[in-house]
Length: 217
Image (cartoon, rainbow, N blue to C red):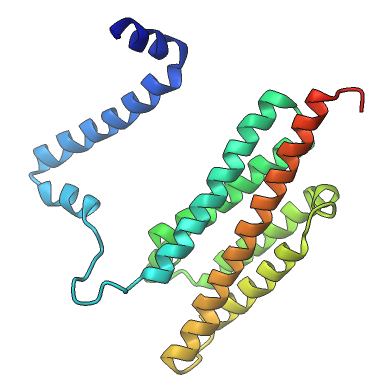
């Protein structure tokens, strides 16, 4: 049994490296909080944002974050497999850059980067402008690939994100209506992004596998 385990570790180096990296990070964190006598930092990092009397709070925000995670995971896994099946293809770069872009949005969503910047006096408008320019450059760079996909899902998502951003930057009164126009449209946009990349990655994987099995066709 031990020999089998050691053989797996030697063959699959990522198992050892990934676990070692996380353990090293936890070790550094433990040393820091021990020296600074700030054990509460570790508690807060692992604390669950949960209110017993109102467990529903943040449910839809958590759903949106989970969908971002699903898209990033699908894209990265698809990119990894495509690099094995058909390396150095444009579609591989499309999938990879999609994962990176969505990963940035995921980080912004989870760690509330926009809110942190707002606390520092930085308006959301420049952030939205950067995101918009990034989306335009992404679309121009991969338009030949995108136009062969069900890009109506991307168009719907883009419209919904614009509506959400406009409402976020406005001074619309009312809590319920504002939440529906800002957060619900954003959640619906993320759902369309998830549907798009799930379908695209599935189709790309099937096509690449078929070409590998039937190289003459």
